[in-house]
Image 1: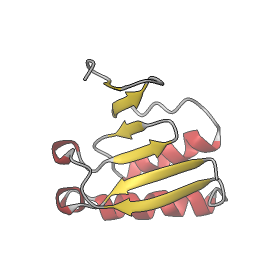
Image 2: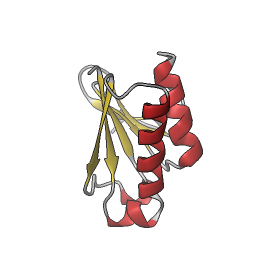
Image 3: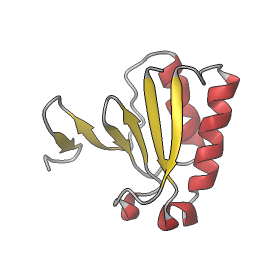
Image 4: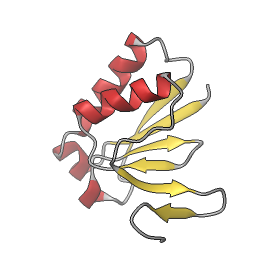
Length: 106
């Protein structure tokens, strides 16, 4: 496995559609035969409730906010194409030393 997606299914994210995000991501991984390359884990709260549903991609350390069905499908398609994923909903990224916020440094 080369990548791991942590999908928040805490209370607020679930209320905002995290179960659909989880199902969509897992369905796309199956459809594109990526289950052996990308592992998924449903997590409890990741502490970013106001931005949820949240998905975190490792080992890159990129946090995606406000995930929905469309963004979930696009995320998996871009990972399949091995493109630099850009959903326009990146919250944090890791620059090799520290996490940074896409709008400003943490």
